[in-house]
Image (cartoon, rainbow, N blue to C red):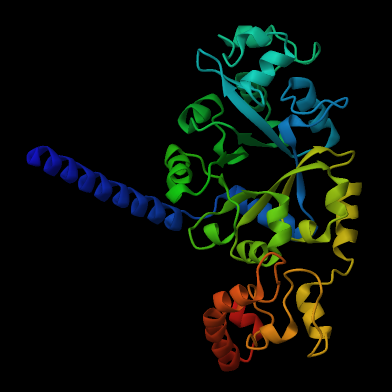
Length: 369
C-alpha cells in the first residue's frame, strides 16, 4: 500500500514538473516570436485609415440569411469589397474541411437533421447538400484551388474559427501569410503556442481581459465588443504595444460608426452585413471617431471637489485624489462595476511608481506608456 502511494505521488510530481516546463516553454515561445507581416500590415492599415476594417462573419449575410459559410455568401462578400472573410470550419468523416457554424446546424439546414451531430462522410456528400434549399456549402479545398490559381489570391485574408487541427489546416490551405486563425482562451498559452509551432504565423487568442495578453507576447486577440467598451484603456495599451484587436461580432457595420469607443480601439470588426465595407462606411466610422466622447476622467476633472456621482458604482472625486498621474492608462477610466475601495487598493501601489516616473521625466505620457 505504501509503495503504491509513493509511486502515485512520484508520478504526480513528475507530471507537475513536465507541465510546468511546458508552460515555461510556451511562454518563452510567445515572447520570442515577432509579429507576423500580416499583423504589421493590419497595424499600418489601421493607422492609415483611422478606422477599423470589417470581417465578413461566416462569409457574410446573404438575402437575410446568416451563418451561411457558403460559396454564394463568399462571392457576394468579395464583390462587396470585403478584404477579410471569416469561415467556421468543420471536418468530414474523411478529414476534409468544409464551412459550417456547427455540424448540427448544417444537418438541420440541409434537410439531414436525422444525422444529428454526425458530419457528412466526404467532400462529395458536402457538395450534394444545399443550405436552406439554395446555397452551396463551401469546401476549403475548393477555396484553396481558387486562391492558388489567382496571382492575387482573390485579394482577401481568411479568418478561421472552430478548428484546432492546425497542421491539417495548413495542408488544406497552405497560405499562412493570408490567414488569421482563432485559438482558444489563454490556458497557459498552450493552444496559441501549438498554433505557432504548427506554422500558423498569425494566431488570434480569444480573451475576456486585455491584461491576460499584455505581457504574454500575444500579437492578436479576439474579444467581445463589450470588453473593448468596458476597458478602452486596456485596448489602447495593447494596440500601443503593437498588437491587433478583432472584435466579434456586430450585426451591422453601421453600429460601429455609431460607437466611437469601439471604432477608436479595434483594428478589425466581425460583421454580419455591411452595404459598403470599404468606402462609405469607412468615412462614416471616421466621422464618428471625431465626435467628442466624455470619459470618466473628464467628468472627474470637471467636477467640483465635493461633487459625488449618483450612478451606482461610480467613484467620488475624493476617492481618486491620491492618484495623481491622471493620464494613466489604467487608473482614470473608472469602470462602473468596480467599487471605489477596490479601485484605489488595486491601483495605489502601481500609481505611486508611475507618479515617481511622472515627476522624474516631467511627462504624464511616459508614466503609462
